[in-house]
Amino acid sequence: MNRDERAGMERMLEDIRREVLYTADETGLPHFHDAVMAAMAAVPRPCFVPQGLESAAFDNGPLPIGHGQTISQPYIVALMSELLQVGKASVVLEVGTGSGYQAAVLAELVRQVYSLELVPELASAAAERLQRLGYHNVEVRQGDGYHGWAEHAPYDGIIVTAAAPHIPQALVEQLRIGARLVIPVGDAYGSQQLMVVTRHQERIDEHTVLPVAFVPLRHAPPDRSPTLH
View 1: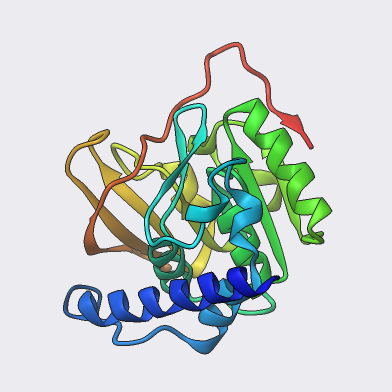
View 2: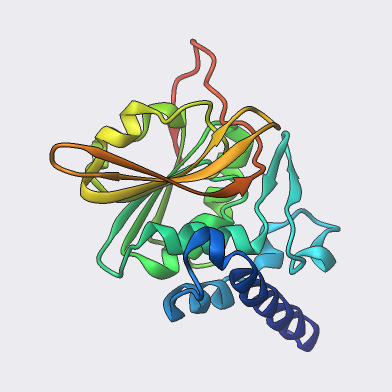
């Protein structure tokens, strides 16, 4: 990381800290854990944005990555990672790999990340990028996130990086007891809320965190078969 990138990273981390304080009344989080902030500092965000947008990589806002998808703003990535409440021994599922940035942050926090991406081109590129950068504890699969990835369930946490119109039942069923699903729920490009869903033995708890704006979570065409990368 060169001097300009180090300065950009410090500015990004300070922006996150400021927004944490600004949203504390809504989120109930006056600060994020050191492990989450260290993960944000460890991942080279410019490597996950399209060529030509590297200068904007550390800005606290989303950026387009093609195919109608975005890389989320750093604060939201940190917030969702914080809300997941996972640790070094955890195995987690991500729905919506995108460029692989959120998966890389999670890889700094947990033992294993399984990540699903509907768009084949994004899945292939993210898998190659994550391997090239040394994130060998991330496995990317092209597939429909609504169905989850039952083969590796139950998960210690599930994170969804696109807005679903409702909470997918398959994802709830793939949580271990006591684990959390962090997901934006609402209309496409309309009213959305970031939610935390916790699975208990006899019930499901749903908690609304704050308003958000995500691209919609899409279904796969009926004839599309998943592939592994």
